[in-house]
Amino acid sequence: MIYNYHQNHSLTLDLVALSQATPDLHPSSALLICKTDCILQIDQHNFHLKQQDIVLLRYKQPINLMPIDQQAFYVSLFFVPIACGIECGPNELVTSMTCSQTDAHIVFRRFNYQICVNYLNQIKTLTTIQPQDNFLKYQESTLMSLLLTELSRYGIDAIAMIESNFLEYDLKKSSRSIQFGIILNYIVANLATVNLTKAALHFEYDPNYFSRLTRQLFHKTFTEEVRFIRMSEAQKLLEITNRSVADIALTLGYQSPSTFNRYFKQRAGQTPSAYRKLYQT
Image (tube, rainbow, N blue to C red; front, side, top):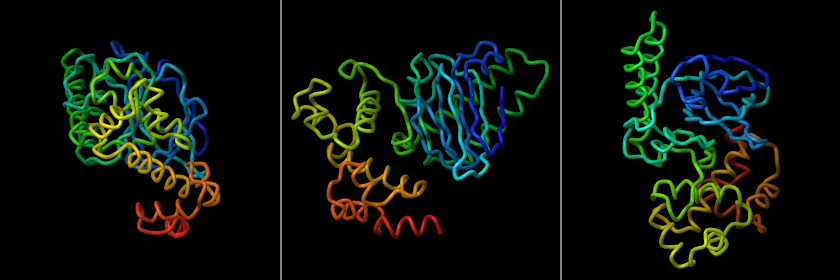
């Protein structure tokens, strides 16, 4: 089942209710295709989605989509069977979503959009054929598997980490890919105050061991990963809000605006004020 929405006001979607129109479908499996920028709101938490983002969603609770600056947004919502155990590449962050009952979403941003659109168009064509039968459903599921494989092909580089809400499990009992998502959730939730010592204490690890673990997961130090996420959030806030640079710096844990400006320039190649002016222009 496919739904298209083109609106200039807030939209509430109950994924469970919508998916009931599709037999044999997990009650909260969906792919959201963003044709324009918009805001995904879950539990009063806003996630900024950009044009050509693809979001893998599993939510039992209703979600909200909202326009940015009162500009109409256009999205498509695909409900296609994603069977537990489906083969979709080695990215466990993706494969675990196909079996979990836990609310979560992953935002994919850096991938070959045209390949994914081609798969989605083929799925759309199959869903229009009547009557539907098991052969068509198998083809739809296979195409979805290929789409998820394409998204998995880029690994964590394709994922907009600051805009995703990963699955939550026991960190010590999880695979490396799942650990990656669990730790990212913690960093994002505690962005203003997080540091290596606090994170290690939270997950009940020795700080030295936790430091080695996160270096293996992120291919950089824990501090570097936190700074990367903070600068990603800073870019988003500069793009979609009018908050002052000093206020954004404090929100992200920087008491010194000059320190924030230095790190931001290292990331974006320009000062926060110049970045905002260029983006808004």
